[in-house]
Each structure stands twice: as structure tokens, then as C-alpha cells.
Image 1: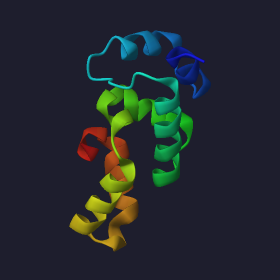
Image 2 (image 1 turned 60 degrees about the vertical axis):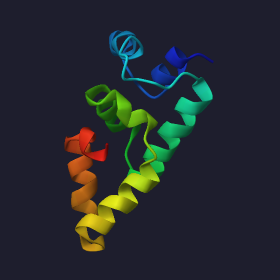
Image 3 (image 1 turned 90 degrees about the vertical axis):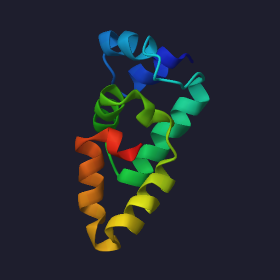
Image 4 (image 1 turned 135 degrees about the vertical axis):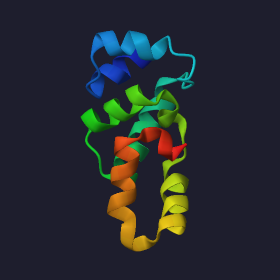
Length: 98
């Protein structure tokens, strides 16, 4: 399976795939890594693939972050009572995770 195939599988449009793969900030190079990262993002945030695609397109580096750590750090900073708000902020502004 290629990176294109993995991105298609999660619901990304062909025109977006081309733009993403040519973006120098998208630094995932293998299908296995991409599949693992998408699975981690889904588990950590509870997001559907379409939402994950949108976040990656807004901020290509988003795909390569350690999202368990991102969420843990955000919870430490903003408190455990704000988990929903933190996830919503990351969704609206994926660069916040960086």
C-alpha cells in the first residue's frame, strides 16, 4: 500500500493528497507510520477520519506529532476539567498541538 492509498482509505480527496504529499511540512514517509499515526489520533481525540484529514490538511505537521503527549501536556496546562475544550481547540486550530 502507498501513502496515497492510505490517505484515500481515510477519506482524503485525490486533489488534497497531491497537495499534502508535495508539502515540505508533511514529513511522514511510510505507509505504516501514517497508518499508526492516524490510528493514534483517532484513539486520543476520538475523531472520525474526515476530521483527522481536515486537521492534517490545515497543519501537515499534525500527522507526525505524539498526540498522547500533546493531550497530556495540554491537560497539565489547562486542567483535566477542560479536556473537551482542549480537544475542540486542537480541532479548530491543529497548530495548537505543535
